[in-house]
Length: 362
Image (cartoon, rainbow, N blue to C red):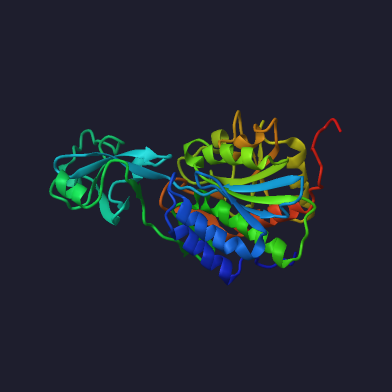
């Protein structure tokens, strides 16, 4: 592959549109439609399931099946309680961070359309200087400018409405992508780019490739659990984000060392099949793709676990994109890392042989 940028204007236009679209856990379908529309020229068919996972398939007739996967959902909130004064209290939908909520603008999704609101917070002048009350899930609330509960309900807001942040995509310093939902809309984007490269470079794989954009990862890997039973893959390469541990208040001795700009992060964990991981790291070395390593303990905490322990055991590996400020509205990744994750998945696929069990007993 030429040593030049692999992201073109069309792919970056798709990335911005894809990121700016809200796709909270349980409501991913609009984003999935954008993703499938982008992939249509590059694949043979699509599979979707009841809960919204989308799979783009290349060479569906093949018996041997390889999955490359990211997850589509983003963290959000649910309306949980509406006070008589018209203030809205929330519960999490995924791992939403209550500490970043105060003063954030939000979109409340209703059948009447988007209702704007703000997470209000008491002015600094009114807070105790002796013992300040921190933001907590039970004291943050949303104000939509309504005078009472009845007016809130008349605006279409009710218990169970999902709430997202409207923060949109932008670029810092020419090469840092910043947005909410980079976790893990970037995964869906990167696997889509792998499909585009295979098509544009005329590569014919000796197996069926299942480009999988799973739902409901943020609440327990549920989409991957469902779709792996449908596909029944032989191999799965999962991509997600991982923490850049070089920013303040993170201890690399506990969290491991990973840094944006230093390349994809290849995981070492019980769910990661060692021979498949070795194929990936050896490919990186051969193709001079920079990469980092991470040791994960009992579980990866990603869809890798769902694929690995399904269907009697699926050879699985995890390639992560280093990211700063996870589960905030200013998640940040570096363009070079994005391109190198795409390259590493692409080149690794070209090394996989149909029928390989990756067993040490063969």
